[in-house]
Image (cartoon, rainbow, N blue to C red; front, side, top):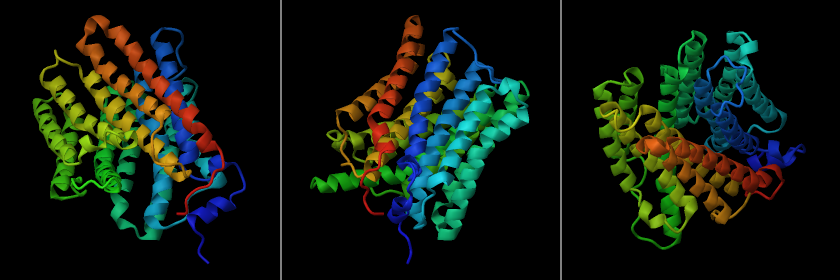
Length: 402
Protein backbone atom coordinates (compact mmCIF):
# COMPACT_ATOMS: atom_id res chain seq x y z
CA UNK A 1 0.00 0.00 0.00
CA UNK A 2 1.38 3.41 -0.96
CA UNK A 3 2.31 5.62 1.94
CA UNK A 4 0.92 9.12 2.11
CA UNK A 5 2.94 12.17 3.05
CA UNK A 6 1.15 12.42 6.40
CA UNK A 7 1.75 8.70 7.05
CA UNK A 8 5.48 9.07 6.54
CA UNK A 9 5.56 12.07 8.87
CA UNK A 10 3.72 10.08 11.55
CA UNK A 11 6.18 7.20 11.17
CA UNK A 12 9.08 9.51 12.01
CA UNK A 13 9.68 9.12 15.76
CA UNK A 14 12.46 11.65 16.15
CA UNK A 15 12.23 15.41 16.81
CA UNK A 16 9.12 17.03 15.31
CA UNK A 17 11.30 19.71 13.73
CA UNK A 18 12.64 17.09 11.30
CA UNK A 19 9.20 15.88 10.19
CA UNK A 20 8.93 18.23 7.19
CA UNK A 21 11.33 20.51 5.27
CA UNK A 22 9.71 23.80 6.19
CA UNK A 23 10.11 23.21 9.93
CA UNK A 24 13.90 23.33 10.45
CA UNK A 25 14.77 25.47 7.45
CA UNK A 26 12.25 28.24 8.08
CA UNK A 27 13.36 28.38 11.70
CA UNK A 28 17.05 28.47 10.74
CA UNK A 29 16.34 31.14 8.14
CA UNK A 30 14.62 33.40 10.66
CA UNK A 31 17.30 32.89 13.30
CA UNK A 32 19.99 33.69 10.74
CA UNK A 33 18.15 36.73 9.36
CA UNK A 34 17.92 38.29 12.83
CA UNK A 35 21.37 37.19 14.02
CA UNK A 36 23.28 38.11 10.87
CA UNK A 37 21.69 41.56 10.81
CA UNK A 38 22.76 42.08 14.43
CA UNK A 39 26.31 41.04 13.46
CA UNK A 40 26.23 43.37 10.44
CA UNK A 41 25.07 46.29 12.58
CA UNK A 42 27.84 45.61 15.09
CA UNK A 43 30.42 45.51 12.30
CA UNK A 44 29.14 48.83 10.93
CA UNK A 45 29.53 50.30 14.41
CA UNK A 46 33.15 49.11 14.46
CA UNK A 47 32.64 46.72 17.36
CA UNK A 48 34.37 43.78 15.66
CA UNK A 49 35.21 42.18 12.31
CA UNK A 50 34.58 38.61 11.27
CA UNK A 51 37.64 36.54 10.27
CA UNK A 52 36.22 36.22 6.75
CA UNK A 53 37.78 36.46 3.31
CA UNK A 54 34.77 38.56 2.38
CA UNK A 55 34.82 42.28 3.11
CA UNK A 56 31.96 43.29 5.46
CA UNK A 57 29.64 44.54 2.67
CA UNK A 58 30.27 41.42 0.58
CA UNK A 59 29.59 39.18 3.59
CA UNK A 60 26.36 41.08 4.28
CA UNK A 61 25.19 40.82 0.67
CA UNK A 62 26.03 37.14 0.35
CA UNK A 63 24.59 35.97 3.64
CA UNK A 64 21.23 37.59 3.11
CA UNK A 65 20.77 36.81 -0.58
CA UNK A 66 22.35 33.35 -0.71
CA UNK A 67 22.50 32.39 2.97
CA UNK A 68 19.14 33.35 4.45
CA UNK A 69 17.33 32.88 1.17
CA UNK A 70 18.92 29.48 0.60
CA UNK A 71 17.25 28.16 3.75
CA UNK A 72 13.87 29.65 2.79
CA UNK A 73 14.00 28.25 -0.74
CA UNK A 74 15.07 24.87 0.61
CA UNK A 75 12.21 24.80 3.11
CA UNK A 76 9.71 25.88 0.47
CA UNK A 77 10.80 23.38 -2.18
CA UNK A 78 11.11 20.43 0.20
CA UNK A 79 7.54 21.16 1.26
CA UNK A 80 6.01 22.07 -2.10
CA UNK A 81 7.63 19.49 -4.38
CA UNK A 82 6.00 16.45 -2.65
CA UNK A 83 2.63 18.14 -3.24
CA UNK A 84 3.53 18.83 -6.89
CA UNK A 85 4.82 15.31 -7.61
CA UNK A 86 2.79 13.12 -5.26
CA UNK A 87 6.07 11.76 -3.87
CA UNK A 88 7.11 11.36 -0.23
CA UNK A 89 8.92 14.26 1.46
CA UNK A 90 12.47 14.22 2.79
CA UNK A 91 12.19 13.74 6.56
CA UNK A 92 14.27 12.67 9.54
CA UNK A 93 18.02 12.54 9.58
CA UNK A 94 18.30 13.07 5.82
CA UNK A 95 16.55 16.38 6.35
CA UNK A 96 18.79 17.04 9.33
CA UNK A 97 21.80 16.39 7.11
CA UNK A 98 20.63 18.99 4.61
CA UNK A 99 20.25 21.53 7.42
CA UNK A 100 23.76 20.68 8.62
CA UNK A 101 25.13 21.37 5.14
CA UNK A 102 23.49 24.81 5.20
CA UNK A 103 24.99 25.54 8.63
CA UNK A 104 28.44 24.43 7.45
CA UNK A 105 28.23 26.99 4.65
CA UNK A 106 27.43 29.81 7.09
CA UNK A 107 30.30 28.84 9.39
CA UNK A 108 32.81 28.38 6.57
CA UNK A 109 32.17 31.86 5.21
CA UNK A 110 32.29 33.46 8.67
CA UNK A 111 35.77 32.02 9.37
CA UNK A 112 36.98 31.80 5.75
CA UNK A 113 40.17 33.73 6.50
CA UNK A 114 41.47 30.48 8.03
CA UNK A 115 40.37 28.23 5.16
CA UNK A 116 41.38 27.75 1.51
CA UNK A 117 39.15 29.57 -0.95
CA UNK A 118 38.13 26.39 -2.77
CA UNK A 119 37.11 24.81 0.53
CA UNK A 120 34.95 27.79 1.48
CA UNK A 121 33.22 27.78 -1.92
CA UNK A 122 32.65 24.03 -1.76
CA UNK A 123 31.25 24.18 1.78
CA UNK A 124 28.83 26.92 0.75
CA UNK A 125 27.76 25.41 -2.57
CA UNK A 126 27.16 21.84 -1.36
CA UNK A 127 23.77 22.64 0.20
CA UNK A 128 22.40 24.06 -3.06
CA UNK A 129 23.87 21.21 -5.11
CA UNK A 130 22.38 18.48 -2.90
CA UNK A 131 19.04 20.33 -2.81
CA UNK A 132 19.03 20.51 -6.62
CA UNK A 133 19.77 16.78 -6.90
CA UNK A 134 16.91 15.99 -4.52
CA UNK A 135 14.48 18.21 -6.45
CA UNK A 136 15.61 16.75 -9.80
CA UNK A 137 15.08 13.22 -8.49
CA UNK A 138 11.56 14.07 -7.33
CA UNK A 139 10.59 15.81 -10.58
CA UNK A 140 11.90 12.95 -12.73
CA UNK A 141 10.40 10.21 -10.53
CA UNK A 142 7.06 12.01 -10.38
CA UNK A 143 7.21 12.98 -14.10
CA UNK A 144 6.31 16.50 -13.03
CA UNK A 145 7.92 18.23 -16.02
CA UNK A 146 5.92 21.46 -15.68
CA UNK A 147 8.01 22.39 -12.63
CA UNK A 148 11.37 22.01 -14.37
CA UNK A 149 11.70 25.85 -14.59
CA UNK A 150 12.03 25.89 -10.79
CA UNK A 151 14.98 23.50 -11.05
CA UNK A 152 16.52 25.66 -13.77
CA UNK A 153 16.26 28.71 -11.51
CA UNK A 154 17.83 26.73 -8.66
CA UNK A 155 20.71 25.82 -11.00
CA UNK A 156 21.16 29.51 -11.81
CA UNK A 157 21.41 30.22 -8.08
CA UNK A 158 24.24 27.67 -7.87
CA UNK A 159 25.97 29.40 -10.79
CA UNK A 160 25.51 32.85 -9.26
CA UNK A 161 26.93 31.63 -5.94
CA UNK A 162 29.93 30.11 -7.70
CA UNK A 163 30.54 33.38 -9.58
CA UNK A 164 30.23 35.28 -6.30
CA UNK A 165 32.94 33.12 -4.71
CA UNK A 166 35.12 33.39 -7.81
CA UNK A 167 34.90 37.18 -7.77
CA UNK A 168 35.60 37.37 -4.03
CA UNK A 169 38.49 34.91 -4.35
CA UNK A 170 40.13 37.09 -6.98
CA UNK A 171 39.98 40.11 -4.71
CA UNK A 172 37.04 41.73 -6.48
CA UNK A 173 34.16 43.59 -4.85
CA UNK A 174 31.76 40.67 -5.09
CA UNK A 175 28.89 42.67 -3.58
CA UNK A 176 28.84 44.65 -6.81
CA UNK A 177 29.66 41.77 -9.14
CA UNK A 178 27.70 39.80 -11.68
CA UNK A 179 27.30 36.86 -9.29
CA UNK A 180 25.21 38.94 -6.91
CA UNK A 181 23.16 40.47 -9.74
CA UNK A 182 22.53 37.07 -11.32
CA UNK A 183 21.45 35.65 -7.96
CA UNK A 184 19.11 38.56 -7.30
CA UNK A 185 17.68 38.43 -10.82
CA UNK A 186 17.08 34.69 -10.47
CA UNK A 187 15.17 35.14 -7.22
CA UNK A 188 13.10 37.97 -8.70
CA UNK A 189 12.14 35.74 -11.64
CA UNK A 190 11.24 33.01 -9.12
CA UNK A 191 8.92 35.45 -7.33
CA UNK A 192 7.42 36.62 -10.62
CA UNK A 193 6.86 32.99 -11.67
CA UNK A 194 5.60 31.39 -8.45
CA UNK A 195 4.07 34.55 -7.00
CA UNK A 196 2.19 34.96 -10.25
CA UNK A 197 0.59 31.56 -9.62
CA UNK A 198 -0.15 31.67 -5.92
CA UNK A 199 -1.17 35.30 -5.35
CA UNK A 200 -4.17 35.41 -7.71
CA UNK A 201 -5.12 31.84 -6.74
CA UNK A 202 -5.02 32.47 -2.99
CA UNK A 203 -6.80 35.79 -3.47
CA UNK A 204 -9.51 34.20 -5.61
CA UNK A 205 -10.09 31.40 -3.09
CA UNK A 206 -10.34 33.87 -0.23
CA UNK A 207 -12.73 36.19 -2.12
CA UNK A 208 -14.95 33.30 -3.22
CA UNK A 209 -15.36 32.22 0.41
CA UNK A 210 -16.57 35.74 1.17
CA UNK A 211 -19.07 35.64 -1.69
CA UNK A 212 -17.28 38.22 -3.83
CA UNK A 213 -18.00 38.35 -7.56
CA UNK A 214 -15.19 40.68 -8.66
CA UNK A 215 -12.31 38.18 -8.77
CA UNK A 216 -8.65 38.33 -9.83
CA UNK A 217 -7.67 37.52 -13.38
CA UNK A 218 -6.68 33.82 -13.43
CA UNK A 219 -2.92 33.21 -13.37
CA UNK A 220 -0.66 32.57 -16.32
CA UNK A 221 -2.66 34.28 -19.06
CA UNK A 222 -0.87 35.54 -22.19
CA UNK A 223 -0.13 38.85 -20.53
CA UNK A 224 1.49 37.06 -17.58
CA UNK A 225 3.69 34.97 -19.85
CA UNK A 226 4.73 38.09 -21.76
CA UNK A 227 5.54 39.82 -18.46
CA UNK A 228 7.71 36.89 -17.39
CA UNK A 229 9.54 36.90 -20.72
CA UNK A 230 10.14 40.66 -20.48
CA UNK A 231 11.37 40.25 -16.90
CA UNK A 232 13.95 37.68 -17.95
CA UNK A 233 15.15 39.83 -20.88
CA UNK A 234 15.41 43.08 -18.90
CA UNK A 235 17.13 41.47 -15.92
CA UNK A 236 19.66 39.77 -18.20
CA UNK A 237 20.46 43.19 -19.62
CA UNK A 238 20.80 44.64 -16.13
CA UNK A 239 23.08 41.78 -15.04
CA UNK A 240 25.42 42.31 -17.98
CA UNK A 241 25.39 46.13 -18.07
CA UNK A 242 24.01 47.43 -14.77
CA UNK A 243 24.88 51.06 -15.43
CA UNK A 244 23.81 51.34 -19.09
CA UNK A 245 20.97 53.79 -19.86
CA UNK A 246 19.16 51.10 -21.87
CA UNK A 247 19.07 48.94 -18.75
CA UNK A 248 17.52 51.87 -16.90
CA UNK A 249 14.87 52.39 -19.57
CA UNK A 250 14.12 48.66 -19.65
CA UNK A 251 13.61 48.63 -15.89
CA UNK A 252 11.18 51.57 -16.08
CA UNK A 253 9.16 49.71 -18.74
CA UNK A 254 9.29 46.56 -16.60
CA UNK A 255 7.93 48.55 -13.67
CA UNK A 256 4.88 49.62 -15.66
CA UNK A 257 4.22 46.09 -16.94
CA UNK A 258 4.29 44.61 -13.45
CA UNK A 259 2.12 47.38 -12.04
CA UNK A 260 -0.48 46.44 -14.66
CA UNK A 261 -0.11 42.76 -13.75
CA UNK A 262 -0.44 43.62 -10.06
CA UNK A 263 -3.60 45.66 -10.70
CA UNK A 264 -5.32 42.58 -12.19
CA UNK A 265 -5.20 40.70 -8.86
CA UNK A 266 -7.74 42.73 -6.83
CA UNK A 267 -5.35 43.63 -3.99
CA UNK A 268 -7.71 46.38 -2.80
CA UNK A 269 -10.32 43.76 -1.85
CA UNK A 270 -8.00 41.88 0.53
CA UNK A 271 -7.34 44.61 3.09
CA UNK A 272 -9.22 42.88 5.90
CA UNK A 273 -6.99 39.76 5.80
CA UNK A 274 -3.26 40.43 6.34
CA UNK A 275 -2.30 36.86 5.38
CA UNK A 276 -3.51 37.70 1.86
CA UNK A 277 -2.63 41.38 1.47
CA UNK A 278 0.97 40.83 2.56
CA UNK A 279 1.48 38.76 -0.61
CA UNK A 280 0.28 41.69 -2.69
CA UNK A 281 2.49 44.19 -0.84
CA UNK A 282 5.49 41.91 -1.39
CA UNK A 283 4.77 41.60 -5.11
CA UNK A 284 4.27 45.37 -5.43
CA UNK A 285 7.95 45.74 -4.48
CA UNK A 286 8.89 44.10 -7.80
CA UNK A 287 7.71 47.08 -9.90
CA UNK A 288 8.71 49.57 -7.18
CA UNK A 289 12.22 48.10 -7.13
CA UNK A 290 12.41 48.20 -10.93
CA UNK A 291 11.31 51.85 -10.84
CA UNK A 292 13.88 52.71 -8.15
CA UNK A 293 16.70 50.89 -9.98
CA UNK A 294 15.77 52.46 -13.32
CA UNK A 295 15.87 55.92 -11.72
CA UNK A 296 19.16 55.09 -9.96
CA UNK A 297 20.71 54.32 -13.35
CA UNK A 298 19.22 57.28 -15.22
CA UNK A 299 19.16 59.87 -12.40
CA UNK A 300 21.86 58.74 -9.94
CA UNK A 301 21.61 61.98 -7.96
CA UNK A 302 18.07 61.01 -6.90
CA UNK A 303 18.72 57.56 -5.42
CA UNK A 304 21.71 55.22 -5.32
CA UNK A 305 21.70 51.77 -6.88
CA UNK A 306 22.51 50.29 -3.45
CA UNK A 307 19.38 51.83 -1.98
CA UNK A 308 17.26 50.82 -4.97
CA UNK A 309 18.60 47.29 -4.62
CA UNK A 310 17.17 47.12 -1.11
CA UNK A 311 13.64 47.74 -2.41
CA UNK A 312 14.00 44.36 -4.10
CA UNK A 313 15.97 42.56 -1.40
CA UNK A 314 14.25 43.83 1.76
CA UNK A 315 10.91 44.49 0.04
CA UNK A 316 10.15 41.90 -2.61
CA UNK A 317 12.33 39.11 -1.19
CA UNK A 318 12.03 39.87 2.52
CA UNK A 319 8.26 40.42 2.49
CA UNK A 320 7.52 37.53 0.13
CA UNK A 321 9.58 35.06 2.13
CA UNK A 322 7.97 36.12 5.42
CA UNK A 323 4.53 35.94 3.80
CA UNK A 324 5.21 32.43 2.52
CA UNK A 325 6.80 31.24 5.78
CA UNK A 326 3.90 32.44 7.94
CA UNK A 327 1.22 31.09 5.61
CA UNK A 328 2.93 27.75 4.98
CA UNK A 329 3.62 27.20 8.66
CA UNK A 330 0.01 27.88 9.65
CA UNK A 331 -1.34 25.70 6.86
CA UNK A 332 0.90 22.71 7.48
CA UNK A 333 0.52 22.60 11.26
CA UNK A 334 -3.25 22.83 11.03
CA UNK A 335 -3.75 26.41 12.23
CA UNK A 336 -6.48 28.60 10.70
CA UNK A 337 -5.26 30.69 7.77
CA UNK A 338 -5.90 33.94 9.60
CA UNK A 339 -3.26 36.43 10.72
CA UNK A 340 -3.50 37.39 14.38
CA UNK A 341 -2.04 40.54 15.90
CA UNK A 342 1.48 39.11 16.41
CA UNK A 343 1.66 38.11 12.74
CA UNK A 344 0.38 41.52 11.65
CA UNK A 345 3.07 43.13 13.82
CA UNK A 346 5.71 40.99 12.07
CA UNK A 347 4.46 42.23 8.70
CA UNK A 348 4.26 45.88 9.72
CA UNK A 349 7.76 46.13 11.19
CA UNK A 350 9.22 44.57 8.03
CA UNK A 351 7.29 47.05 5.87
CA UNK A 352 8.80 49.76 8.09
CA UNK A 353 12.25 48.34 7.37
CA UNK A 354 11.54 48.43 3.62
CA UNK A 355 10.51 52.09 3.76
CA UNK A 356 13.39 53.16 6.02
CA UNK A 357 16.20 51.84 3.79
CA UNK A 358 15.61 54.04 0.68
CA UNK A 359 14.66 56.92 2.99
CA UNK A 360 18.32 56.93 4.07
CA UNK A 361 19.22 58.13 0.57
CA UNK A 362 16.25 60.41 0.08
CA UNK A 363 16.85 62.23 3.39
CA UNK A 364 20.68 62.24 3.57
CA UNK A 365 20.85 64.37 6.72
CA UNK A 366 19.15 61.50 8.58
CA UNK A 367 20.92 58.67 6.78
CA UNK A 368 22.41 57.01 9.87
CA UNK A 369 19.09 57.20 11.71
CA UNK A 370 17.16 55.56 8.88
CA UNK A 371 19.79 52.84 8.43
CA UNK A 372 19.62 52.03 12.13
CA UNK A 373 15.82 52.02 12.07
CA UNK A 374 15.77 49.73 9.02
CA UNK A 375 18.19 47.23 10.59
CA UNK A 376 16.39 47.30 13.94
CA UNK A 377 12.98 46.68 12.36
CA UNK A 378 14.39 43.83 10.28
CA UNK A 379 15.74 42.17 13.43
CA UNK A 380 12.41 42.75 15.21
CA UNK A 381 10.53 41.09 12.34
CA UNK A 382 12.54 37.87 12.33
CA UNK A 383 12.95 37.71 16.10
CA UNK A 384 9.17 38.03 16.23
CA UNK A 385 8.82 35.19 13.74
CA UNK A 386 10.99 32.96 15.93
CA UNK A 387 8.96 33.81 19.04
CA UNK A 388 5.53 33.41 17.40
CA UNK A 389 6.17 30.61 14.91
CA UNK A 390 9.10 28.80 16.52
CA UNK A 391 6.82 26.78 18.85
CA UNK A 392 4.66 25.74 15.88
CA UNK A 393 7.75 24.57 13.98
CA UNK A 394 9.22 22.68 16.93
CA UNK A 395 6.18 20.95 18.37
CA UNK A 396 4.23 17.94 17.20
CA UNK A 397 0.75 19.07 16.29
CA UNK A 398 -2.11 17.62 14.33
CA UNK A 399 -1.67 18.26 10.62
CA UNK A 400 -4.16 18.05 7.78
CA UNK A 401 -3.90 15.01 5.55
CA UNK A 402 -1.90 15.55 2.37
